[in-house]
Length: 381
Image (cartoon, rainbow, N blue to C red; front, side):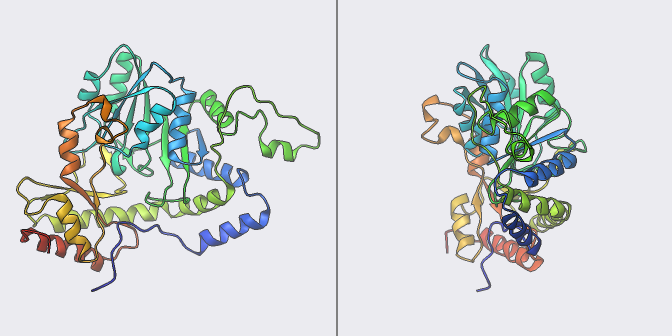
């Protein structure tokens, strides 16, 4: 058998290695000038005035909710069909996640379902740009404006994606990104918040470093003894300069990575068109996805179940993953008793195919050939 095909693989090279070594030799390892440079690169790229680096997208979401004043007694509408961190971040601030259904074709939160979930306790809507496909921001901005709600964007997967040509995380956004190894670019772990609100950005920077009144750079650069103060309870959500050194180099690769991902995604869509029962991703006219993942849906009557198809592929050296999880069916949230039929159906009938920038067309052809073979199967081989 040919070599195994992973679900994803980050694109890293000597540039990232050299940047980390340089950071190590500098003696400054925690949040410093490299973090500031990485923040500037992300802010400039998405079109925001500020980018605030954090230790992960989960901590970025927590910080954004906390700094926005969301707390106990509040409700935040969020899709269940998302990684569980989306809901957990709401719980971290003492608020209640209220799960609403998704659109059947995009897997993104449905504005109509979100509107139906609004109560007097609703303070915000947390939309998720699922696997790099932008949600209907026009619909949600209008909805939030009508009801006086805050709109936050879980853009964990969405760096480089665009809504009506505007990159996600830019003007009018309060967005949180992830740099986990399964994302389009990586720093190993790490997150980023983007905003154009000067006051909010200043508070986010304060809170991510224990609410310390003086930054480490400020103290070290001063020729006087400076004593910091702690005006409120903060958090240790800093990014290291080692991670930022990698991130700076990854930002230089981003446009090329996006070109390759989109090419492979378009090729998948063309090649899969001849396989009955496998539906490619739907892309609305307003959206330019980054294809952080390539999700297909199995139509009713497909010869194998989703899980059996994943096993079928794995036996042929091809890694696939289930469709996006549903948080409301996990033990942590089952007590809410939510029934989300569109979400459940979309999750159960979808799976993610291998996609990464170094994937060859020969590897992709192997995946397509295995899917063609699976269509004739009646049980796992």
